[in-house]
Image (cartoon, rainbow, N blue to C red; front, side, top):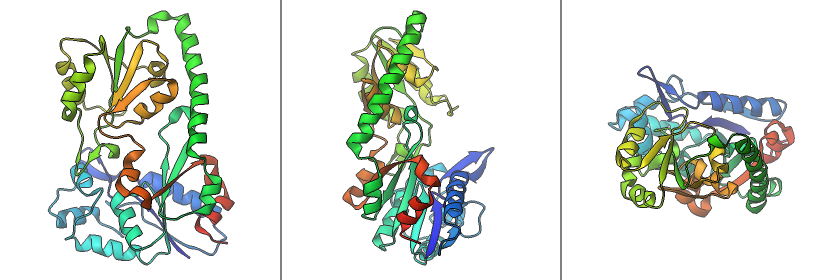
Length: 333
């Protein structure tokens, strides 16, 4: 069995003006786990992890052939649907057809769409953004996998477990608040959670959704609250969205906050949590908070694009170091 382990090799990181493969480490990490668990199996494994400095795929050449400037915007423009016109991309998809199964870390929608059209089985691994629960993963696949169906968490059980852990977490934060009531936010606060600017769940059609795209939503929502709390993403250093929100809410009490996000989820004075498409809006619900996304929920990404063509399964991360799990997943001995 010929298996390719890859991922979103089209996703860049910009470091000191130089493009680097954003997902190279994650792809190689999971490929190594896969290889170690099936090293004595009858498989031939290939790994493509670097589209910017590798030999198999030249992402910069692909974007250039399409008259795009290689970078974040070209990645967003092609994330869902890859346009025709690149011989290099055609060569890459021809290569994909030589494999029996493709396993990937965060496969982009255009690759999952291609593999589905060619009836090539794929399994796209993603780490759940729900951090308070501990690490879980979910797998998107075009396979009707009985094995995954039996070994995954049903959505209602998954949600019930999340609520249970959230309650314990909230109680702990409330106990801390009782010790130091100055840590409470002002009454009737709205918390806006910002994200990294080039988050894939911000991709709206062919561009990144920005906070100013939702000016009317923001102004309307703010009317119901006395204080606006702005929570920047700890890994984002561009202040443009923070500056915009402070100007937008110049007539209101506005605070930039930096404490642990779960403190605000547990704070009785925080009445609503919102974001463009952050998992924070999803997590907040398990702490009993009302929340919303201006664009779309994190979990709607593949589901909204593919509909019922894609099956999603939630599994514990402990499965990844289990030889039986991998063997059953790809049906190999």
